[in-house]
Length: 166
Image (tube, rainbow, N blue to C red; front, side):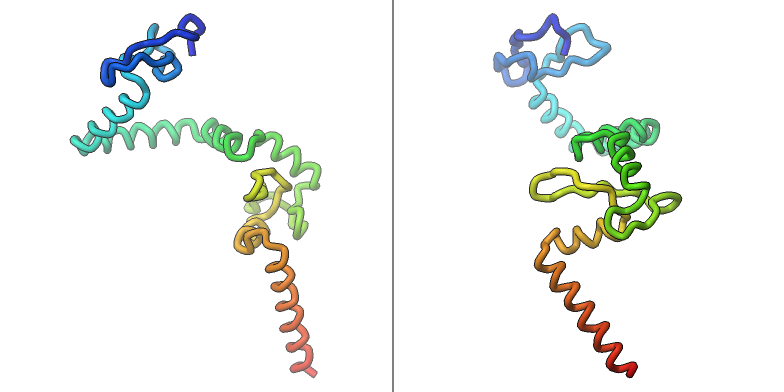
């Protein structure tokens, strides 16, 4: 937000409410805030898209083109928003792990994509895993008791195979 507007109020031309300036979009190429507050602007855009399918299609094309052109920038932003760390931080963690999965120790290079593991309850990041280990933990919902039962299950069936072989 531009400093000269900080702390000011403005009346929205749609809802006629006197709102803090933070409720209005100030674009880089504009000298003043928009005439509609963010909520009213969103309602207007939604109505515009609903009444004219071509507008919706053009908006999709514009967004798609922007995302393709700025893929790295968006990936960095999304990663930072989701995990609270930068992609560089993720690779620093991976380097400390010798570029290996923290569970199975497979090398995470080439086609093996490193995944940032995190606690689904707290959102706290843990370590970097391979896809299989990350998905496995996710499917078991990080439930330690269920994982212990899964280990017992595997051991039981390995023992059965050994008995059948003898």
